Amino acid sequence: MRNDGYGKYLSEAYDRLNSEVDYGSFADFYEKCFEKWAGVNVRHVCEMACGTGSLAIELKKRGYSVTAFDLSVNMLTFADKKARDEGIEDLRFTNQDMRSFKVYSEVQAVICMMDGLNCLTESGEMREAFESAYDALCPGGLFIFDVNSKYKFEKIYADNAYILEDEDVFLAWQNFYNENTKKCDFYLTFFFEGKDGSYERCDEHVRERLYSVRTLEHLLKDTGFSVECVTSGFDFSAADENTDERIFFICKKV
Image 1 (spheres, rainbow, N blue to C red):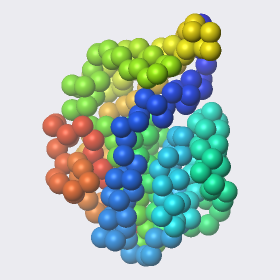
Image 2 (cartoon, rainbow, N blue to C red):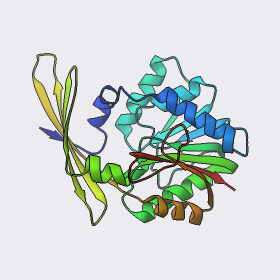
Image 3 (tube, one colour):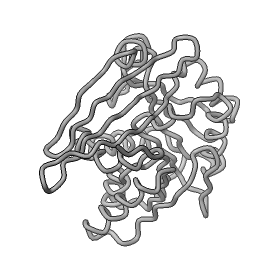
Image 4 (tube, helix red, strand yellow):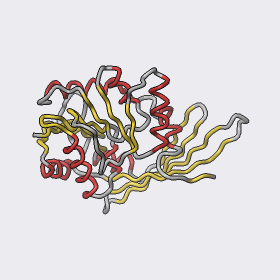
C-alpha cells in the first residue's frame, strides 16, 4: 500500500474518472461571460488549479494565450504531456499556489473551474487567492470561478461513500463532513491494475470547505471586485445554494 501527497495518484486516474466533464461547454460559458461583462478584449487567460490541463488546452485551441498552474506537479506532468500529444507547444504550465500566484504580465481573465477554490479551507487563504487574482488582472478583466454549494456539501458529500471505476482503475471514496467547521474530508483509495492483472492500492486524502454565497461575496467585494453575476449554470439562471450543486461567480476588476 502506498500513501503520498495530494495529486500523485489522483492525477493518474483524474481524466478517466471525470470523462463526463464537457470542457467545451465550460469554455463556451467563459466566452459568453467575456462578451457580456469584460471591460476589455480578452486575449490572455490565466487558469488556477488547472489539473491535467483539459480546459487550458481547449482555450488554447480557441485562440487564447493561456497561462495555467497547479499545486500538484503530478497533475502538471499529465497536462504537459497531453498538450504535447495534441501538438500544442506554447502552452505554459507552472507549479504555483492559488494563494500566492503571479503572472508575468496582466491578463484579461482569471478562471478556476471544478471547485478548486473549495480546497482552500480557511477564509484567510480564500482572501489571499482573491487578492492574487485581482493583482493578476488588468482593469476591466474578469475573475470567474465556481464552488461546490451548501446543498452539495450537506446532501451529496455529507458522510456518503461512492464507488467509481474505469477499465483499469477502481476508486473507493469515503466522505466525512463536519457541520461545525464546514469542512469535508475525502478519503480516496485507488486500486490500479497492473499488466499482470494484479492491483496496487494507493491512498490519498483531500479536504474541502463549504463557503456560503454571502461569505464569498463579502470577500470578493472587500478585495475590490465587482460581483457581476452569481449563477447556478451555463444559462445564467439565478443561483440557490440550497438546491443547486455548483455556484458560479462572475466578477470584474474595476
